[in-house]
Image (tube, rainbow, N blue to C red):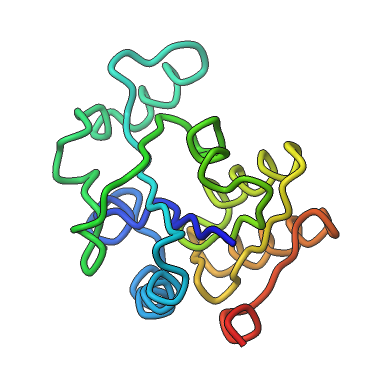
Length: 173
């Protein structure tokens, strides 16, 4: 079992950020508990801007120009208490790719983090398509808002048995 903690970054944590994720603060303790329980099989990821957006990403960053900052920028740092962890970085919503696949092996892949309705969802579907069993920890994820969070959990649940939505207590119990 390998835990991927998706994008627990300052840009999503800070209330003044245009990308603030409601509920971020409410999942920090649960994410920390999961990371401690599943260590060392844990990967922290970061969403970072590409050096030069291409394709549809051009329009995306035209809408969000504040985010066109290099990977070392403060907004991309992991939020406390996760700041000391090394990261797997990607300029895409999904963090599934060869590097995470090598860490996960046959799985299962356990997902926590933000946002449920974007990067967590994208990662879950991509990993499931690759044949890896996925467990999304509902109380260790937060969406852009509560409705988006619930909707994303519902959609991911439709991928059963490839994707299973669980809570932290049942996963660790």
